[in-house]
Image (cartoon, rainbow, N blue to C red; front, side, top):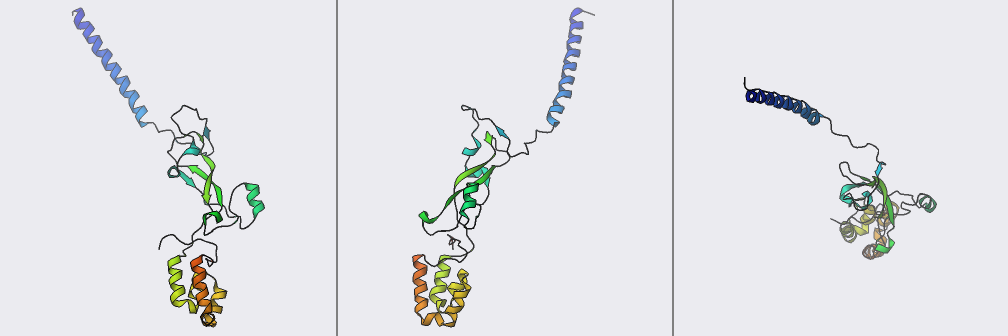
Length: 197
């Protein structure tokens, strides 16, 4: 047996051993369970200024799950104690609508640094409950003398009065149409008009 043949055989054995060790190593890496995301939403990672990771509080709303604004039902001291929430909902003009903070959490699978649950500002205190302006106006014009517009808005007491007086002999009927158009007659529950018909 020549030296060349002996070294060639050793090289082949060494290659086979190397391949076997690589094959036995690869499946353990492939089949290993991926690391699970932390269940603790408050866990945070320190933000490094020149890092490619964005601070979680800077993420757009598409990557966040935000709660609805807290309703304090007219209790200003509760809102002041918590530092966020709505004293009243609704408002027909921009100046009338309160703006508050709400709790937001980063969606799973989004990589960012900083707190993953935080308060975000800029949410309007508005709620919708199925009242449409155009529908109510049509009710008011066509069936307002029967109090249909007031029934539609949830104002049952005044609706019955309007029904029994046949729209206040027509005067109440016209006044309600004007009140609707000027924005003075709104849903009883304080909700805003739905923007789409």
